[in-house]
Amino acid sequence: MPPRDSSTLTGILLAAGRGRRFDPAGVQNKLLQRLPDGDFVVVASARTLLAVLPRVVAVVPPRDGGVADALRALGCTVTVCPDADSGMGLSLAHAIRHAPLDRHDAGGWLVALGDMPFVADATLQALVHAIDDGADIAAPLFDGRRGNPVAFGAIHHAALLALDGDQGARRLLAGSPVTTIAVPDPGILRDIDTQGDLPA
Image (cartoon, rainbow, N blue to C red; front, side, top):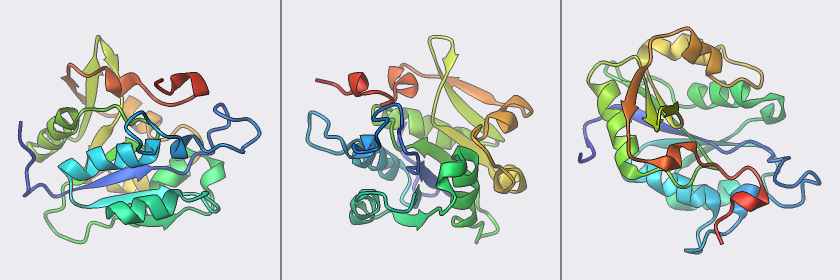
C-alpha cells in the first residue's frame, strides 16, 4: 500500500516521557539509546513516521539531552512541552496545539510514540488510508491486541486539545468508535520500556 502524498494528516511523535522504568536514576535517556543499525531509538521512530507523512511535529520535554536536536536534524518540527512531567495527555494536547488545522481539508493526526522504533511503514500507511477514507479513529491490531500508533480524524480536535494527565488518549479511545486494522506487525506492541527491551 503506497503512501498518499495527498494525505492531509500530520504526524505527531511523542518524545517527552522521562523513561523512569528504563533508568530510575534518570541518567540514561532511553530515546537516545543506540539500536543495532546505529540509530537512536527516537530517530528510528521518527524516520518511519517521516517515510509516510512529510509533516511531523515532535514534542519533547525541557532538558531533553539532545532528543530535540536529533529530531530537528531529520526534519521534524520540534516543540517543547514545559508540563511534560504531568503526563502523556498534556504532551499530546501540547503537540496538537502546535499542529493546527490550518487548512479546511486537514484530515487529522497520526500519533506515534518515540520509544516504539519497530513499527512497520506499512502499518502507518494503513492507518493514514483509514482516516483518509473516513474513519474517525484508526488503530492497528496484531494477534488480537490493539497497539500503537493511533490515527485521529479532525472531528476529535477539541477532545485532543482537552487531554491531560497520564492516560494519554485512552479515555477518548474508550468512548469513541475505533476502526481497527489487522496488521502482520508485532512492532505495534513493542516499546523500549526497560533496558532488556533493547535488541542485542
